Amino acid sequence: MEKVHCLIIGSGPAGYTAAIYAARAGLKPVLYQGNEPGGQLMLTGEVENFPGYPQGIHGQMMMSDLEAQAKRFDTDVRYGMVTAVDFSKDKKIATIDGGHTIEADAVIISTGASAKWLGLPSELRLRDLGGGVSSCAVCDGFFHKNKAVAVVGGGDSAAEEASYLANICQKVYLIVRRDEMRASKIMQARVKNKANIEILWNTAPLEVVGKEVVEAVRVQNTLTQEVRELPISGFFVAIGHTPNTSIFKGFLDMDEQGYIITEKGSTRTNIEGVFACGDVQDKTYRQAITAAASGCMGALDAERFLAEKEAMASL
View 1 (cartoon, rainbow, N blue to C red):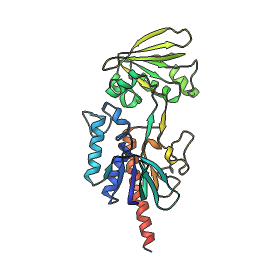
View 2: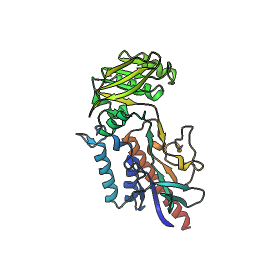
View 3: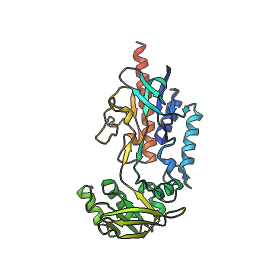
View 4: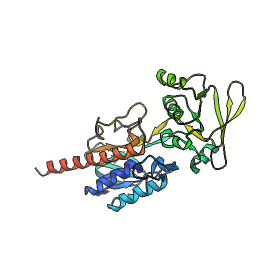
C-alpha cells in the first residue's frame, strides 16, 4: 500500500488551488484528476470573470495553467479515478481505478458537481464546440449581451438563471416542460415580473440549431404538438447539477441532494482529516473563483490538522 501525506481527489480550480497551497506548505500532495480532468471549465469557452486574465482566457487553457502551477511546486498530478474510499480509521484509504490502494494522513475532496444535460445531440455538440450552449449564466451570459437567449428548466436554478440573463439580454425565453414551475414562489414572481422574459409553458426543446454556434432552438408544445423555432444566440440548460459524491456515501454527512456538508467557515467534514472544497460542497455560488478560494481553505485546514497531529504525536 502506497502511503502519502496529503491526497487530493479531483482537479478543477478547487483541486489545483488546494494542490498549490498544500505543496508550498510541504505536504507533498498527490492529486488524482478523476474522469473529468480540469472539471466543468474544460467545457467552457472564454472565461472573462476570473481575476488576473484581463483579456479573458479559454477554460481549457486556464486549467492547463493551474495544473502547471501545481506541478511547479512538485504536486504529484496523476491520471486516475478514485473508485472507493474507507474513512473508518485514522489513516484514510483510497482505491484507484479499482486496484491501486493509497493510505493518506489527510484527504482533500474536490470532485465537483456535474451539470445535467438534456442529451440532445445538437446540444452536446455545440456545448463541446463552445458554441453557445452553457449551464452557467453568470459564466457565459455576458457573451450574449443585448441578444436573445433561452433557458431550459422549471426550478429555482432556471428561474435564477433567467432573471440574471434578463438584466443583460434583450430577450429571454424560459422553456418549461410542464404547466407549472417547481421554483419557489418568490423566484417564480421574480421571473414573471421581468418584462423581457417570456415563459413557454408545456414546451420541450427538440433541437439546438446551428453549425458551429447557436442560431436558434426548435421547440414543441407538448399539448398542441406545434413546432416553432426561436432565434437565439445562447442556450442555457438549468435542470440541476449532480455532486460527484457517490463513493463517499456512508462516511461523510451530505444534504438531501448529495452535497458534502462542511463545518461553517471551514472545509472540515464530519470525519477528522477529511476536507471538502469547491462545487462538491457549494451549491450556491458554483464559480471558478469561489471554488479556487475554498481550495485554498482546504489546503490550509489540512495543513493545520496535520501540524496539530504531529505536535500531539511528539508529546
